[in-house]
Image 1: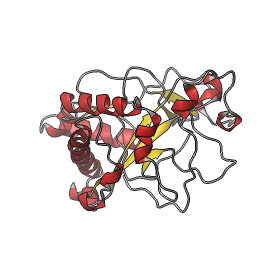
Image 2: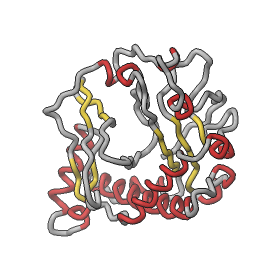
Image 3: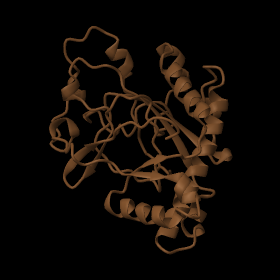
Image 4: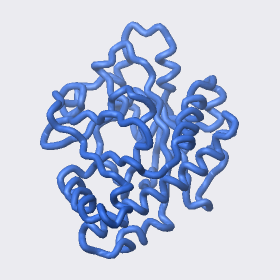
Length: 263
């Protein structure tokens, strides 16, 4: 989950603060007319994001069949949902709750962790390189999680209580899951498991928490603009059952349906 270094990252207003005001209209910098954004393109309700079962990959009896499935979804989709991933429910719940509680703090509290110009780490928005650039309708907290020597704890909130401890545990579990998935991807190609994962053992792992406030013109903004990740692997955790995440497939946007349980 590496990130390219940035020469500039300009500060912009908090979207959460904007949304708390009685707005008649969204500021023009947030209004989108991009022809390739999900808000202006129809979805295909007949396509469904495939699911990969981690427990089957770990089971000798079912591994071959699930490896073939993993190979197929990586080839045809480049994205999938993971079930039975092994990250404890209580840890996932804690990470969600503490992330939510952070964004509910007053702006001045969150500004203690504000981004510095030229860096994406901290509280703010990402990849804002010009004053004319269109902006996403969201705020974020972006943290260098691993390796330990790359951590800048001045960006790690000490409130709510237990936030740092939860983030430390969560980032370690996500790394474990990412390395395991990379190993199985390599095996699906007929390679040794370490052929992919070895390059990520000491790699950079970042955690990004996004907050999407309510909007008076929801059809004219996007929480995050259409993009392709530049990272080795991205593991996403949806906060609740509110749908919004979409994957581009065969010229259509496919909504990702939230799964329940240890998924």
